[in-house]
Length: 169
Image (cartoon, rainbow, N blue to C red; front, side, top):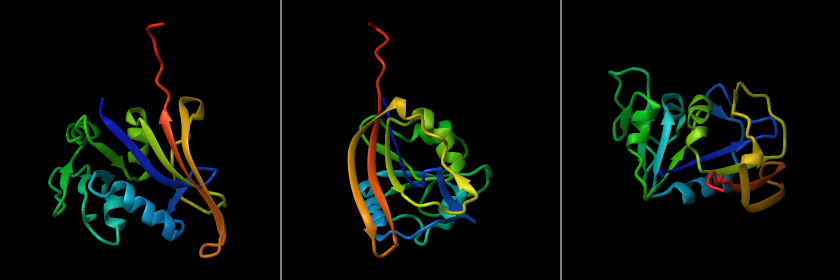
């Protein structure tokens, strides 16, 4: 089974962005993202790729999904569908879905792990993560950051694994 993981920072109402930008700049979250995804494969939509300050993301295999069959992104693997992106994921390595909203929604059925940064504050947004049915997921790690003075709100780093359902019993 392919190891498809989603990494995202969300609010309690699943907000993730506005005007193709993140809603906040949390230094610890960006460091965590880099540490977790470094040396791995990252899969994203075209708009997410275009929003990156540094393209392609260094020390990662970047896969960009676009509807335009003639479009290519330098230093990246360019694909035109979710199945094509999945074809580049192998069984042994964890692949990370890094956005945006539509890409997250389409990859949710394939995800076996969620790396969430839960931001404990509401923000105005135009892009949202799909609602998570937490009964299908088990919390395996939690690290709380209360009242981070650099951003003036609290957040938590959470890691969930999909609950495997045994149909043989």
